[in-house]
Each structure stands twice: as structure tokens, then as C-alpha cells.
Image (cartoon, rainbow, N blue to C red; front, top):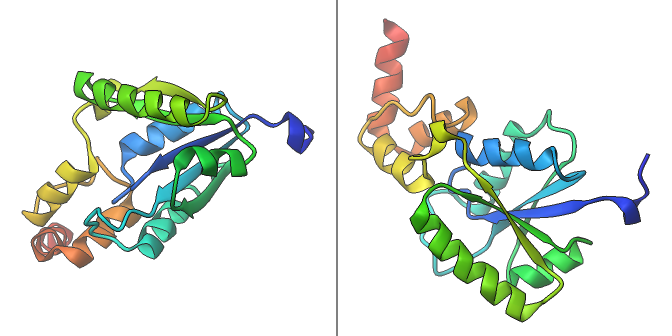
Length: 176
């Protein structure tokens, strides 16, 4: 058993509004590299989210319940300060496309400027999740689109509570 001081901990930050199968893919692969991954839901009053912090934390806890080495938390303020408070020096991020890289590169540079000891580690998304984002999923769900293969069941059900068009689709599918 590793001592706490020997554990490799990464912080996987995001809004996770909602968590997707793409997020979970990055998380699973991060657990192959790190002993513990802290899924850190950012509190950002400027960002308009569909789900409350509590709802997002609950969904993440439910879908990661069987995953050893996952801790779910929330934070506000500077990410690099939070990372250090968690006993880590690693920010875990997923990349889908070149546009993600440009944005993430800028974030990594400012984080390095704020704390030179904190490193950003990037994992490329699995090809099947290349087009998946929380924003696209929410838009599809709001129009009654089938998001079954894109999010865990608990997230699909929570989306259906928010979007009547998706709820009607799920009810119609259940009847057939």
C-alpha cells in the first residue's frame, strides 16, 4: 500500500454540466496513470449552467461509484491553488480537437505562470468521443435528440427532467 506522500494525484477540473461518456473515458485513462484523480467541479458564477453544483456532484458520484481512486469535489478560486491543496502538482485535461488545444495551451501557460510547480497533462480523447461536448449534448437533449450513447443513464434521466422533448422521446421509446 502506498503512503499518502507516495501517491500520484491528478486534478481533473471542469464544469461537467453534465458529465459525458467522453469525460468518463478521460477519467478512466487518467486512473491508469495516477493513483487518484480528483474530479473537481468548478464553481463559476459567470457561467450559466443547466445543473446546480449539487446536481453535478451527485451525478458524478453516481457514475463513478465503482471506480477506485476517484474523489469528487468542488472548488472556487485559482485552480493551481486548489491543486496544491489536494497534495498534487498535476492538472489532467482532455483534448478533442485543435480548437481545444489552442484554449488548453493558453490555460496551461497561465497556470505555469501562476505556479511553476503545477504541470498540465493532456490526454487525447478516444475517437468515438471526438464530437461530444456537454454543450452539444444539452442542445440535442433540449430538442428531444437521442443522447443514450453519449452520457450515462443517470445523466440522461436528469437531462429528461430538464427537457420535456427528451422526456417525451424516452417515454415513447419505452412504450415500443
